[in-house]
Length: 635
Image (cartoon, rainbow, N blue to C red; front, top):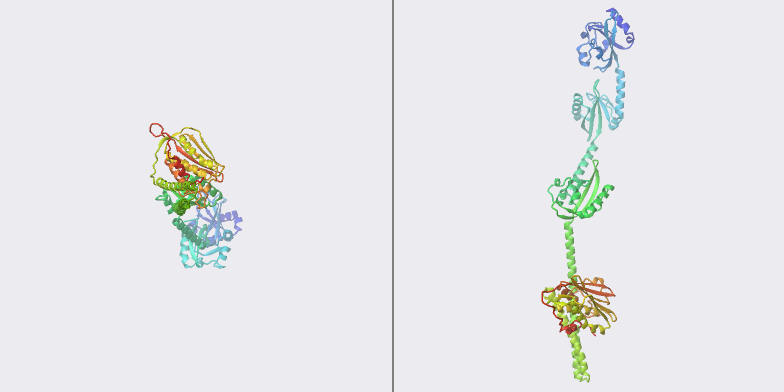
């Protein structure tokens, strides 16, 4: 044995000079050599006990550190270096060497070096690097909760408290103890990467994130603190804010749609009602554009494009939407856009203004009716005032003439015959005026009530009108008015009421004469166009104001209603003309340039009654009709 010991010591002379422990075993696993340092490391009391390996390397060593110091069966699989973490805190680095003695006997030398101090420095340096690199308060504990190390942020956060080598549970209180113990146990036993839990302290909530940073020796646990009180309050406020917005969204009096590039994501209650659907799922994934009326597609596209490009809000604009059933509703539209989880979401509010539009329309109709009623009342008052004037004027003239005649008779005037003739003429003309006024009132009433009946016959309308104009040429000559009659056809046969046509032409000519100054011109023209006969009467008189053109044919729409007007008349003549023209299925219009000219245009359809021949133009009472129609023109 002595020889073996000498051989081994000589072989490992370099190792004996260092503070290391040695154990040498042969192939039969007998201990050949061990030194005192080896005994100290492993707590072996009997330094001289050289025997079998199992009697020295006891079960505690094998079970606790999972090492086997036997002669290895397979040298190739043997680890050259291994670090052992002992229960007493020591860190031992283990290596091996294979030696041969003089007899060529193999032996394995196990070498043990105490690196506890070195490892502690490295460990401390490594932990400090980890802790100081963190931006949040952090500390390291052992598996029992004892505080081993911490960073500066940890101390600052807890006002400089120093509990090094004390239990961390004392910092957070008894309630946190069980939570910490349970979390550490779960973390270590299940070999988890990390685990998190919430701990309360001084009305604050901390999130503690735990992770194992050393598994080789006694377990160390890194703890990172986050004050989540502010975050929780923010989350709470955010939740409350979302709830408020949700209530606003759901209870909004307007329809609201969330959509992504036009594709509907959701709709509130009013949005469902607006489109007459039972559930927003019926329109989900539909394009909102689908429900915009075609007349407003260009407006919607333009405003939506501007909104997306500028990431802004559209102005409020009016449009129409179409419901699922095809109903059309008037709406106001306003959209905005906002980013959400990396997506661009549009928020469109649509207000149903159909009812309001109807109310405005009805209000306008009511206002118009009220204005019309006031205007009608005013016109009626003016009409009856005018009518009273029209009745009173000829009656006054007749009464004055009768009184004058009576005076002349009583005075036995020598020239009484000539004067009587003049007086009688004046009385006759004013009687005609009264008769004309009464006839007009009766006829306009018949026309309005639908009781006026035409007696049509097939006549040459050109010949009829030419005869009428020939009969009134004297009136124009006496007022020095030039008259022109023009026609492109000598014969245009059509079914007309001759009396009504005389009434129409005489009224237009009498109007033209009354409002045309001496030296001016009146032109009557007849043309045939397709299946129509066109009659126009143009004068170079005073013309008609633009605003008066619309009421000139109304029964109460006299252009000049004043009692001091230059020309006499009740103002119902043109209303009768219009009525008689329309009874012939025709149309009358007026064109005028104020202070220059006026032109009345009549369009009558050419129709032929089923009868034999054309009736001759016989007008026995035309002179009296002319006298009646021209009774308010004084020669």
